[in-house]
Length: 380
Image 1 (cartoon, one colour):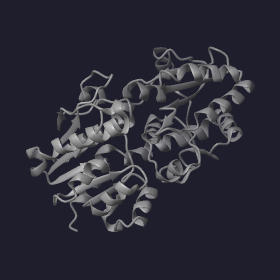
Image 2: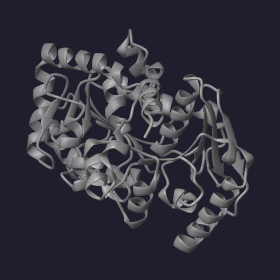
Image 3: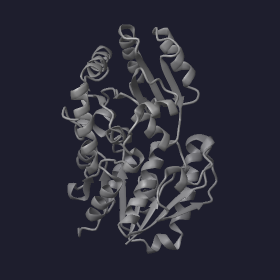
Image 4: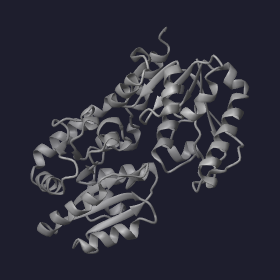
């Protein structure tokens, strides 16, 4: 089987979709499929080879097509670059020889609607005019959450052509830690504090992710217990100073927090494992409540660190009270209480974290790839 994966992205990228796409191509290839990932030439500050940067096996072909990089010209520049890239991808022999054309980008796939190819559309956002049209005419639709699958079915996509495939994780990044104190010393983190961690960007698609509420909650916890420490990893370089100033204005002094900009995927995993509790404090907006499948969720589970999360339907697709601690979204007081409670429940906290680590075994990239391939090869 030949899969031609088209991704109109810069690669490598610090954004999560780069992790997902590279790992999925490697996982597809592990099943025996012949995979080619096609991306455009786009300026990127990350100079490493993508296979090295993402630590994935070099078992598929990565092709970069030279395309004018007009992203700085805003929407018009993006459209021109995308059209150019899509046409170049279509004109290659591999496009004609592929069994499936796979993409997360509706704007790319819409140009192939009349070519009679088997298009597989992986959806990560709610139906728009373009994505609805593409999904209705695609051979198969892969939805990352039950909420998204329902939204596309309601938009007119036959439910038998949709499958839910949540995101996943590379367990090799999370080898068990035998000496947490040594890891903390290596990462220049305190060994005598309860570390409350958050790893990831502060916003997604210009949507707030609840980090301001976390800062306020931590400040409330710190006022009662100065043996706590806040670790934020993944802020934009321009955001760090603002976060530091907010924490100080909330009464959290220097030495009680560490705010780090983007780090490599491997480094992020180590910071997750160094924490005592990891926070996913998403607000109760439609996107977060029903349609997301965040990589952070699966990586938190794999880290073996206790998870405190907003109580949202999208999160409940994966987690339960058996393997995580839930709080009402956007409730600063409840989050502070949950952090304090987790600090005091060592046995129960360890039990839930261990169960999350066991449950994550069902959500690997290899298993996700196998499930998707089984679905798309089914006869219509």
